[in-house]
Length: 113
Image 1 (cartoon, rainbow, N blue to C red):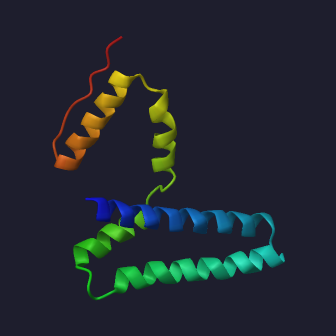
Image 2 (image 1 turned 45 degrees about the vertical axis):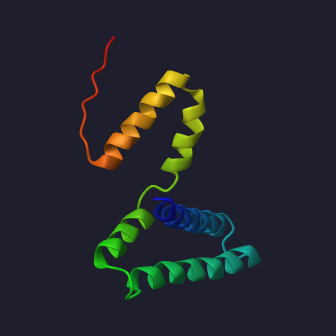
């Protein structure tokens, strides 16, 4: 599972870099930085295209990569920022929920007031 985690993480970080470069380009149109970051974005997009068209990857893997690249890649860091704010028992519960999701199990949350 560690290998898959590394690949997904690398795709998220590339996408984050791409989004940050794009933001800079939009804030500083026509600048040298915007031109440079535009070139970097082309290279990042080349990496994405190369990965999803590489013949050694099964179609299901390529589809999964496409979904990851098009997902909200900033959600993972947002979750990581919130986890330390939980009590230890709550963190254990979150870990259990994640394990259930990874195993394909379903569960129901009930709000108690």
